[in-house]
Image 1 (tube, helix red, strand yellow):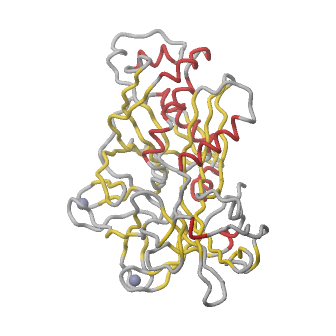
Image 2 (cartoon, rainbow, N blue to C red; image 1 turned 60 degrees about the vertical axis):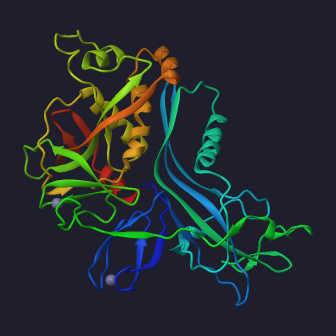
Image 3 (cartoon, helix red, strand yellow; image 1 turned 120 degrees about the vertical axis):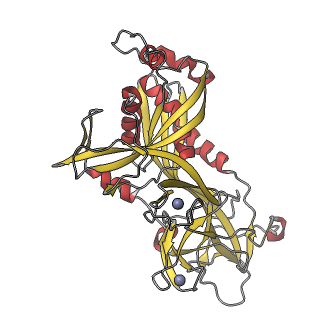
Length: 411
Ligand SMILES: [Zn+2]
Ligand SMILES: [Zn+2]
């Protein structure tokens, strides 16, 4: 079983101030004391700090580290190589400070950063793009094969501030011990840009923007449903936006529903507009029939967190199946996997999805010039039947091991 690092965050109920702990993937917080529900939002990414244990009176300096957890997909001639990425790296490059946080963020409870925090918070100088660039170069240096398309599908992108202070040495304020290098004589902390953090966690009420009813969802859900006006709402930046949705009704009562994004996209650089285009692009052993050039082509992508090889499996096979059935605009009943994959990541994965079925492989060379832009999205819940160790979707002939559910919950 994959052991994935997860953070625990200490915070307070925004309503009654009661202390609580959260896991980093939790978004919908229900206070155990006042029962008020609220949803955690940010315009970009969450920022945490490690609690310090410095002696009283020390001036603290917080160095930000990026944390990225997700999957990296790269298309090579021999197929797509997915891998799990879990990195932390300085967001202010400085040889003075430790290059990574090590394991401390996994053993200590974090807190959300806020403008009230004491200390100097160094201003991040390394962008999240730079961070992923480094991860990509690390991969590129490990292979000599040409890479045709590559993308990160992120589960988590956040910043963690780690505290330090200066005596005659630079001290780690978590462990209260010197960081290996003594500061050079001319080191002057005031030359590094920083100040009070200008960020805080925000909470929004979980009320349906359409009818004011209480929205429902799991703790880690990125989409919440309103059972009163039958609508689905996805978190985008600091609010909720309406999402079109539907189900393929199950024929068996104990099915479990998986959410998928069905994405209609503008593809330039290759003709991929209809089912007939798909048959040609994927070089399927099928004769194009009348009417197939009228049938719109759509990408399909899992809307739940999943291991990278499963992500690819579902994306590729559902896209090739082009589920023909019209969906029923209802919310599923019974067991449902929550939406945990951001739509943005699903959209970014479309080129890899395309690379997974393009044939012959020489065609991959055109991938660089292809641009894919999402036009419209529907969230479709597809039922899977349970049998022994398997989950099975008969209509699209998809089979997967039940352990997928464990991964989906713990990634
Ligand atoms: Zn409360
Ligand atoms: Zn409503």
